[in-house]
Length: 279
Image (cartoon, rainbow, N blue to C red; front, side, top):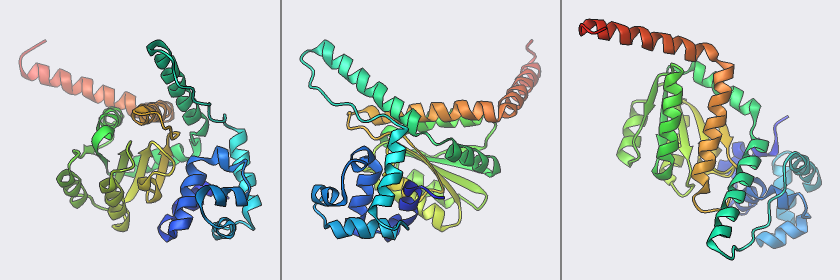
């Protein structure tokens, strides 16, 4: 059975403004949603209680209580958010920042979907070429991901961060390719538009994002999302952690890819050295 997260992503393009506001709340603040009634959620989001009930039914549940039970089950597997305390000194600011970052990484770990990651790996295996798209703060994580995937022998094309670069990459994409978006800042509409265009063209799509409610994630076939945190600058680190975990999983799931590619690189290096008359 599909989770409420998957149902929301699939229905994203059909949502009204009120439903979209509610969807973001359930994705990003599910720890709160698990403890609130439909009336309390409606009051918190300034929408009618009936809208909350209709949204649950729109997703395929009998009513909000059934949806809330699923959210509570998800929460039982994870830790609740830590309370933020304003630091009193620079030293304490460091301590608070690192604790919050560790908490974000821990929640990313707890919410990491092995099933979704396995599906993404299978999709990468089937792709003739993997096109990575990123902008701004996501460029560094994208470069890291590109290096890992190239080491595993995948055919990788990393598009630059400009609109022209994204357009050129999409223009060259063909069926059999896979387009993967790496997103840190969900205020970048270009990535959202790019992955929507790719999917509309029948191209397989994936997204590694800093928040479950990321606009790019709503169009991707395969999604891995970090835990959304309000801590400035933490999104990039959490996406890096997400990529690191995913690549460690890939290393164990497809060890032959890395070994075979390393052997080919060593053989080619030796051939090039011999060509130049070097030992």
